Each structure stands twice: as structure tokens, then as C-alpha cells.
Image 1 (cartoon, rainbow, N blue to C red):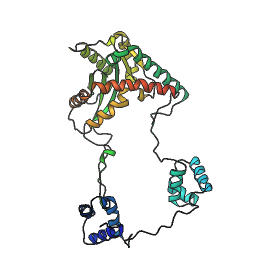
Image 2: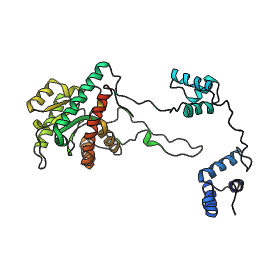
Image 3: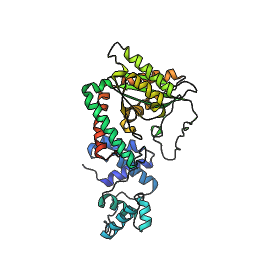
Image 4: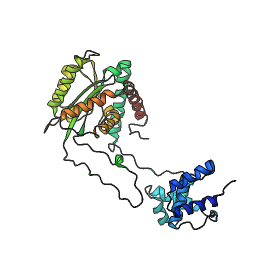
Length: 353
């Protein structure tokens, strides 16, 4: 014996009147009818419709059919013109502006014009013609360096940058998403204050898992001297490694043009040590492996912990870095090489999905 939809709805109506939950009703139907039972979303929808009074019968609602004038060429043209004039208009805005039903507007947008409503992509900077030229030159320089190094690029190509790390544990807005029921208030989470204690973390690494980190102490800023000391410490550490030692004179170092990086004192130190610099153009974090992938994933992990000192931050950062696979680091270098070519093809513009 087969049950029809009306009988299923009648059962759902009866059970919800007796206070049975949607999930329990669904499990009861599933136990008796198996594959013939309606899905849980359907049972839940019927339960809500009956309890709210939106549905008063067990049969299907009469089908009136779609009006033949739903999507006329004139309406499609009006919607297209309005969107071209202001792409930020919502379906509701267009409905009010054009006097069309909101469902009609949405159907025209998605099925006739094949449009998607997406958020704009943030870019680091509004690029001028000069910036575009500099980015092309930088991309060519990075590709030339990586190509010339060949397999040695994983060993001798060094990337360096800094980032802020807070001492207190916190999560991002997207990480605070939770499921709540009808009538429940959204939970509140205090926004991290700009004045919260934090440290600037300096990181240098190669793709064969050679790392160097340093966190600034209380009231300490990254000036030229501190940066030079970090480079010197990194050189001394890597030169004395028992496995894969390397001297500063053997590396190709990429970093941005922050003041401590480009000061006269820093330039002299780098020149005296025989370091080959890989130039990174202004407003180009997408050329730096720290900004491309490392800092986002590292800070996501560090946000889970609270720290009492900069030493604890350094230790946590090193633990994170050491768990990265060498293959992942190699892949990131290879992707940077391809990314630079894409930027060149795009005339220096930022490349977004």
C-alpha cells in the first residue's frame, strides 16, 4: 500500500498538534515508509506551515501558472539598464524602482541576465599607471630569480616580513558564527581593542624549512637597528646549522620596502654581507609568500592561544612553522612563479578570482 502526499501531510498535522518535534515525526515516517517517506526538510516545512497557519489543507495548493508577461523583453531591458547604471542595486531596490514584483526581478537577474550577486574583492591599493609598471618589473624580477636558481630556489630563496600578533586569545567575526533557534538572541563577543597588548613578529624562511623568528619586547619597535640585528642573528643561526647550513652571501632575499628594510644602514649591512636582494614593488603583498599564505594561517592558529610574553609568541610561531610540510612550501614557491606571470599578462593589475 502506498501513501499519498495528502496522507503524509495529515499525519504531520496530527503529530505536530500533539507536540511531536519535526525530527521525531520524520523518524516515524521513515521507520514505516522508508524511501517513500518525505524528506526531513519537507516534514519540517509542513510542520512550520501548519503551526503558523500558513497551510490549512492537506492537498496541494492550486497552481495558477506563471503569467505570460513575467519576463517580457521590455522588463528585461529595464532591469539590465538599471543594473548597468548602478550594479549595487538589490532585487528589492529594483522592485521598488521599476515597480515589478521582487520575484520577477530576481528571476530576470539570475535566469535571463545570468548575473550573480557577489561582494567586491578588497585590494591593497588603488594602483596608478606607475604602480602597474613597477609591479610588472617586480614580477619579472621574481620570475627571473626563481628560474635562475632552478631547484636551489627552495633552499636559497628567502622571504621576510613582519606581522602583529596579539597576546590575548580572540577569534574573527566569521569564526564566531553559531546556529540559533527562533527567538534566540545572537551571542555577543567583545571586539579586540587596538590597545590590547601585542608584539611585532619578524619571520624569515626558505621553502626547505629553514626558519627564523623574533618578537619585539615591551615598548620595542622595529627600527633599522633591530631589523639589522634580526638579519645578523638569522645569518649566524643558519650558518651554524648542522643540516643544510647557509650563509647570507648565498641567499636571495625578498622583502617589501618598509622603512627598516630600505634604510641606509640596512642597505649597507646587506651590501657588506653580499646578500642578493629580490626587489618587491610597492603595494604588492601578493608577491610575498608571508602575505600570500603564511601569516593568515599562522595567525589563525595563534589566535587560539593567550601569551604571557614575546618568548611564548616566538615558540608558538616556530611550532606552527615546523608543522608545515616541505611540499606545501615548495608548492607555494611554484604558485608564486605562476602568479607573477599572470600579473604580467594582466598588465600589473591585482589578480582576483
